[in-house]
Amino acid sequence: DTGVSQDPRHKITKRGQNVTFRCDPISEHNRLYWYRQTLGQGPEFLTYFQNEAQLEKSRLLSDRFSAERPKGSFSTLEIQRTEQGDSAMYLCASSYGIGGGTDTQYFGPGTRLTVL
Amino acid sequence: QKEVEQNSGPLSVPEGAIASLNCTYSDRVSQSFFWYRQYSGKSPELIMSIYSNGDKEDGRFTAQLNKASQYVSLLIRDSQPSDSATYLCAVNMGYGNNRLAFGKGNQVVVIP
Image (tube, rainbow over all chains, first blue to last red; front, side, top):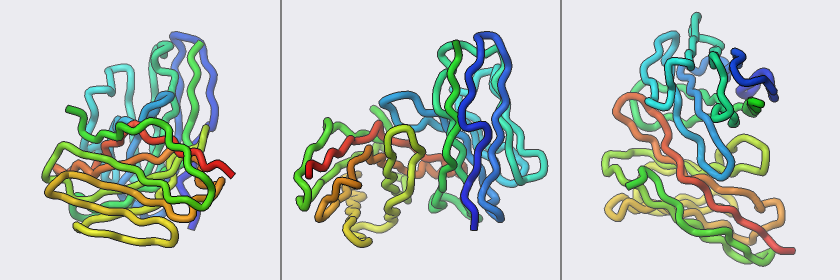
């Protein structure tokens, strides 16, 4: 059973450029999450999908951020007009769940974004 | 008030000793609790999950949960240099979205 994979692992971009990250969850996991982590802090929730439906978005997810999971499998996170404050590790996690409150989330290796 | 708090600074323990980490959370309806280990530059790796009051043991790790006090702890017995990492406490916030709220983590350094 392969784990969560993310691509690319590292991305360096200039301020104002658009970037897109991909996440492939553990097969048969119906739930997929995006988090962002900055140095010295714990991960912060960005958004959550159950199958292809985006069920929750954090207020941290400004209009420049958009996420999709078109077929309920892989997901993409796009950041438009990047800012230096977007520099962080972007983490994807997946889980299998039917009800609420007890899923175990498994994290991918992350994509480290540096905005110059 | 932060959703999850880990207030202790870096913890240095000699090899073979017990490392003790604490975490408090704010929302009484939280139902599931997790400890993740994170090595520098890497992503979080699940160590333990706990859902009921009391202790849960897995190898050298023991998680303790007290819902009345809204308190979760992790004990690492017979600490090894490979245990040197940041330990993140995470709480499932429920309310139908299952998002995890994380503390900022506690760094553990095991001294050979």
